Length: 190
Image (tube, rainbow, N blue to C red; front, top):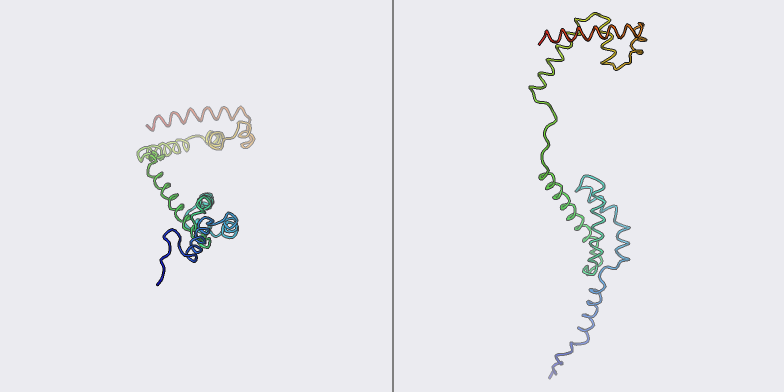
């Protein structure tokens, strides 16, 4: 007849197995093992993040955060050989979260007003340019040359005088007469 064991003590073999499991559970993934994993697999995890995200800074942030999270939960990783798998899964999850936050942020941003002028304003501007060009063509040759060099080419009076081979006083005279003639022509066109 087999004598029953006392309820308070399990057999020695079961006790030894449970102690080994308890030691492994208490130990988890060591900091040294995680450090080696970091050195060996950082680039690969960065590449994984790069496939999921679009900018390097976000990829680096995600991988760093993954290592931080696995480091803080290293005692829960019972099998150190699965540390890399946990890291990969954490990188994927953090990448998804990053993308979700970006999409949500874009949805919540107020839409800016368009910078482009309305079609009506563009049509008026084009008509004014056409009128200005027509009025410029109606000026005397020297007046037109002085105005184009002075105001469109943004040259100084001395530079215009040198370019055209006339005096600075002539540049002023042609310029003022040309502006007065343009004003008259533009008022007549409206």
